[in-house]
Length: 376
Ligand SMILES: [Zn+2]
Ligand SMILES: [Zn+2]
Image (cartoon, rainbow, N blue to C red; front, top):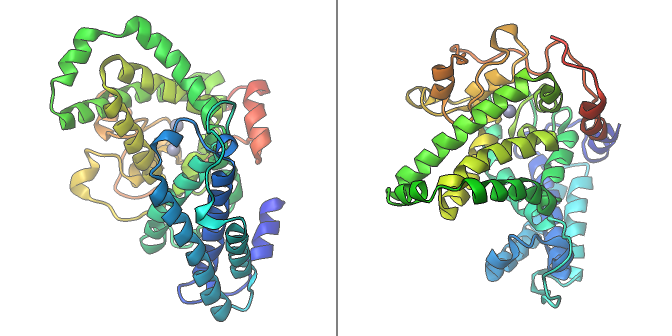
């Protein structure tokens, strides 16, 4: 298996704690990969950057960031190679950073006229991976609920592939979601409602948008569980046996498209673009966070806002919590509809109960279209 090969190639039997050269090696390889990818985006913006994001980039900041990543990759590479016997990680990071520099580094001029044609969202992949990794990996390492579950736990490569599959074809995916949504809004848009909402304070609009989105999400999520044909697609998301920030990426594209479409249509009926954009940022951060291997809990907050432990109960394979906790932002939505389940402890097991699905990306992508119904 590829994952085992990667683990063997980069890993070793030594401790992976702080100060052993493990994390500096990981950071070196990670920064090296990001900087190399970033320089490629500068060279081929038409092919490798998303037309939706391009016009909004603060180019000077991004160039500084690429430069910092190159320096970081080299620095951490040196630290890791001093501390650790096996130097593959450090070497990989430093080589990628050197290659990025040899290709022109952060000062590559943009020569192409960056419009037209189908593009790959490498820019979005790199940026989101950088931000999410920066926010969530430290949280999971510092305050894990399951300390024995490492960052590179079983099936981590599968979830990286899923992460790539939802980022690289950004253009196609957003087209799939946006086209029906804009069509629907064209015919269903209610100007009176839009004006009414626009008059509210920004924060109230934002809060209302989250409520509307979560109620819409509740019903499509319920359908994904209860309609056997839809469950086949959603079962992929529930197949993770260990949850962490990137496990949340494991989702069939049909599942993703349905959910996003269902959320976007009611939002587009009444809310302004800035509110929708703010919601999209919020949902990315919050939904990722609820999958995190993160132990701390705020008692006063968890009745109101979905915390990791709440969504973990949605992912359990334990009978008592099957088909519970469909909301992704507000637990009280589940209370209203009678699907709330929230005991004081954490679940003991995760994944599909009594059901097997293909262990690889291609199988999981094709199988739902061809396979049998859910076995209870
Ligand atoms: Zn679910
Ligand atoms: Zn989930």
